[in-house]
Amino acid sequence: MIDEDAIRYRWDMVGSKLDERGRRMFAAGEVRTAGWGGLAVVSRVTGLARSTINRGEDDLDGRDLPKGRVRRASAGRKAVAQETPVSCPH
Image (cartoon, rainbow, N blue to C red; front, side):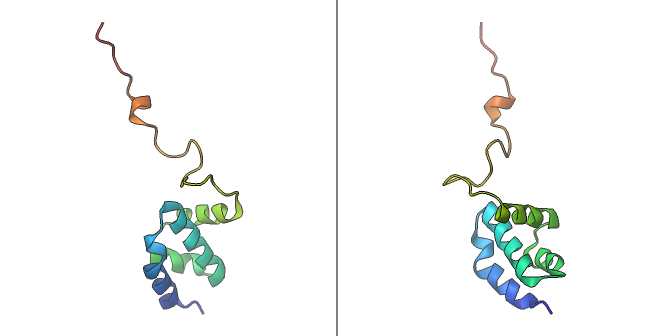
């Protein structure tokens, strides 16, 4: 049986205070610890989507990111300067 209260306690004390990648990895670790049915419980407790937790499992299995990075290179939104061309006043 999965101890939902224990997962909620750990999430409230640690997981909810992490950055985006840390939350994903924390939740993925909880799923692996909980075993069968853990994904549904951890998703419900944390409010994270199952797909987000699955990405966290990929993060656990993958390489470390360079120090100070939360996302892989080229991930995330484009900078506004790249999206909006600047018109010249000529």
